[in-house]
Image 1 (tube, rainbow, N blue to C red):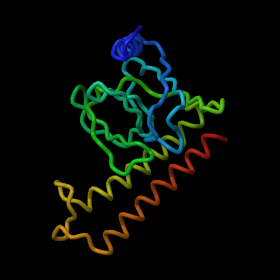
Image 2 (image 1 turned 180 degrees about the vertical axis):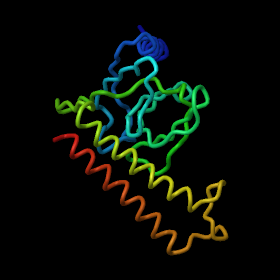
Image 3 (image 1 turned 90 degrees about the vertical axis):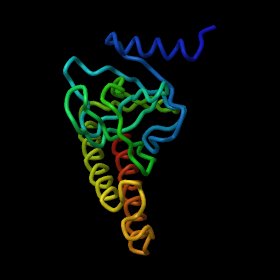
Image 4 (image 1 turned 60 degrees about the vertical axis):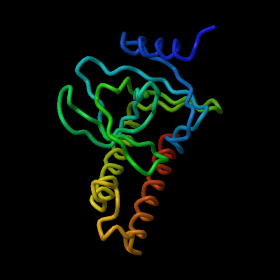
Length: 183
């Protein structure tokens, strides 16, 4: 019997050696495009190639696999970091470039439909990455470094309305993106 850790090692080794791997998604963090139970095909980036804004990538986050969208990048070389978030999530996180294991190139839905994320779908992903980047930037501009609201720690009605609007824009963009990918 193979353990989960041994299976993770096989996936990591496969990606490091230039092979594509298939994984079943365990959460809805990328809904409405990818749901728990959907299968994804992940391919390593070619030598010298780097993730682009909007790419859906597989991160190795402290020994756990995370599938999220790239919405920003900072730094260069070994110090590069990526801003990433799930389409269903509200907050983005920063992860070191070395944690990117590969890019999702295909989604196999539970009902049998397949979505190829190359070609025209790269345009949709690129748009979503840029749109989510802009919303994330707006959200961060309205917060202190400790995450509290700028205006005296209180959330005013205007800030609350702005946060709700940003969340609505994110959800709407994610739904439109998922719809366009399925067509």
